[in-house]
Length: 321
Ligand SMILES: [Zn+2]
Image 1 (tube, protein in one colour):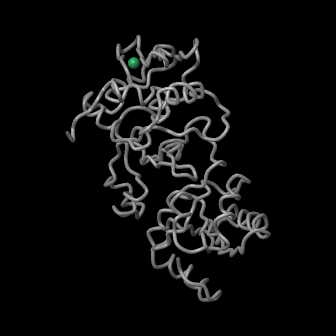
Image 2: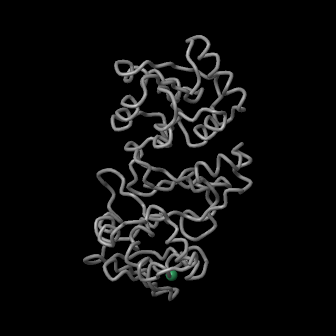
Image 3: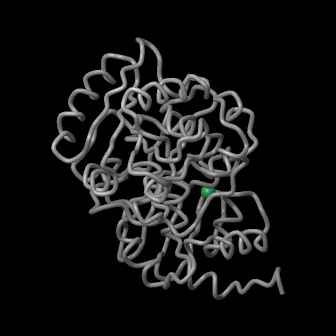
């Protein structure tokens, strides 16, 4: 029974809109009620209007390369896998469980190409990635950390192709986006889906909130966060930049009474540390850790990170998480 899949059930549960968002196919334009058009994410060639999607019917067709079908055909085409493998992938996607077709195709569908959204809608589908890609080792991320954060190299089609896919969750742990980090120096270095609101989420908050203790370490980037976690500090979140929005501040001060700022040792990081410390001071006890010029947490060895945070703990007489 383990490999049994119901294609019909999957098609009714996971919508084309969710799958397209997951692959960062965010350039399609609305051409009618529930219908979208644009460049084809599968062949990525000629024909700016070649790719047609009909959300309510749950079908797509490309008039240039001839690809077409339902949500399973789309996943199979994007991943270069069989229909059966695509079905198993969609079936095994935990976020899709219990999701009604109306939610999948309706609300999310209207937002497919909308630039401004209220909050980030959840994705109902996760990418299949290689967690043992050498880029992760080059950035000092070990296998256990890659598995913990579910990061890895995506070799399928679309704009995430050839990038490290980094899943981002809302504070309830629902997957809302993938950020794609270039591996070979392509532009942009970090690709977020169009319309994604960074200011609405803190990377890793949903895990950090469950960590022991009342202290959290705040860093700038994904890799800073993963490296600090790897050094033994589970209570760590990333701003995905050097700003703290009001929407990010509330969950932080609501859950943690001690906040440690460990931003990059450059002018931007310094200025942000002062500014963020000021905005948090009335709600939590804030510690500003200033790294030497040019140093950032993702370049620090685990024992360096432990030393910096350990010195702070000794000076304040508080324990580790
Ligand atoms: Zn095509």
